[in-house]
Image (cartoon, rainbow, N blue to C red):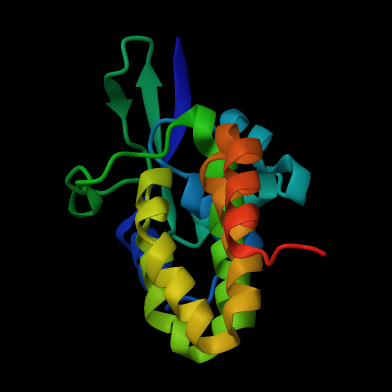
Length: 192
């Protein structure tokens, strides 16, 4: 049995890193998820809630951001109908986002993207580039402190505390209750 999977092209990786091609945010979300291991059905299950469909995959394919590959049951590539020899890329040196953490990855990605824009503004450009290059939840965790420092500098301690609590919930969902109680208790002034 053969199934079709999708992987990013050089143009797709360039868009993730630089936003040079000004891809629409929803399509960009789909492009982030393309990892060379998932079929269109698997990808669409993850993004159907934000209004993406088969046309979205076709748009990325036609735009040259992704390429299509057929895989046989053994996992060995059978053919690469849309890839030319010069578009064969070496394996990435970062681990792909695990499937079970895909929703967490997307939530953290969207949190960073939206709050960097609204809370830090243009001064957050370098940080946003790091968010775009992140390929795992662990890489997002490494960006936590630089992000919080930038928010503190731009918006002050109250905004930093608020965003820190939400970010910690996203980065460590299993520890939400005990961690948040401790953080709130240590930062909040005692009530009278």
